[in-house]
Amino acid sequence: MRDIDNIRSDFPLLQQKVYGKPLVYFDNGATTQKPLCVLEELRKVYTDYNGNVHRGVHAMSDLTSEAYEGAREKVRSFINAGKSEEVVFTSGATSSLNAIAFSFGERYISRGDEIIVSEMEHHANIVPWQMLCLRKGAVLRVIPFNDAGELELDEYLKLLSPRTRIVAVTQVSNALGTVVPLEEIIRPAHSMGIPVLVDGAQGIQHGITDVRSLDCDFYAFSGHKIYGPTGIGVLYGKEKWLSELPPYQGGGDMVDRVSFDRTTYNVLPFKFEAGTMNYVGAIGLGRALDYVNELGREEILQREKTLLAYATERLSAIKGLRIYGQAAEKICTISFLLDNIHQYDTGMILDKLGIAVRTGTHCAQPVMDHYGIQGTVRASLCFYNTIEEIDALGTGIEKVIGMFS
Ligand code: PMP
Image 1 (cartoon, rainbow, N blue to C red):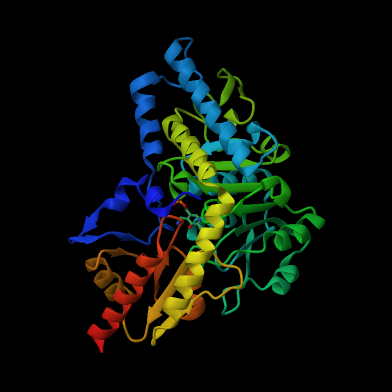
Image 2 (tube, rainbow, N blue to C red):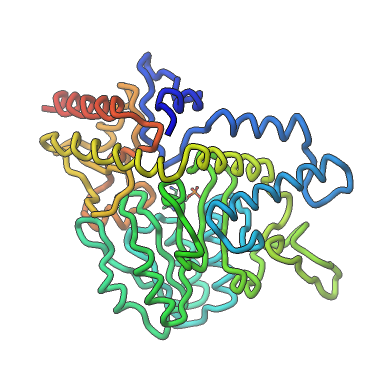
């Protein structure tokens, strides 16, 4: 992997100062910063060849369509999907999850059917299923997790039943950092013919995701969490499912032929891409995936493992600090609380020291309920963070404790 100073120079925002102090950006779970090559790619679309996709016979439209479909192919290759028809662009993970909850629900869910999610899901992988349950009279079942933050797989096996229609789980918990053993979720579900959706919002950027070897039926993620632009996301679905599911939005480009008597739909993946898509975002996402590949996904994973080990050791040594989420398999996210100090106070003082962390429930209120707490402070790291920044966090936390003692 390239030298870390050299890598950091790709990210203009990391050079910022906050209150006169060098910015330490530890909120990568919420959104990641963008390398210059992505910003340049976005500019290039608008200055060199912008035209709406799949619409014109003119050169600008052709060039943009080619770049947009090129981005789809980059996503396909990045997640190792079998066909680019299985890659649908959306506005983000939330929109991908809602699309499946709606479409799958319309086609396959009836009164009394069951849907399984886990206790550690982000609200985006809970609420759309609850809305579906309300609409259809279906029932939501929940896989619990233990205090270390690991899913209780024995309990999961007990929840699977002939009424289960789909299982929807996260790849990585945004609140605890837990890496979910997806194979152990998918295998038993498939043995009963039940499809599995994976929320990859916190997984895609850490390590290597191969949807074909995982054999998941659906996979969702957001561009902005993998160094790409906001407003663009991906929904992968196996062709056999996507071709069966009804579209969830109607409009331009998703149709084949429209008349007042009858409308027929476009082929995959366009059936699920109604209206003018965020094609500039998709092209930017394609460039971000190239960037990640250029750095090396295995190298990123190894560097992030080193950062996690160091941060865990440094923070665990602080008296009065409790880490929430101690799963054996974790990505580099550390959720914690300080004895008798509210998480907002901790977050606000760290901010004054130039350290950006997230505070609150992290859109995972059931996780907080599990521990009987209001929220945590979350430091979510990625490859461009450094050991020195982790030391700055450790020193900052000690300062917070000192102020309150
Ligand atoms: N799932 C998980 C696990 C997440 O962490 C997030 C974002 N915090 C989402 C889904 C939703 O992503 P977005 O807001 O980009 O749609």
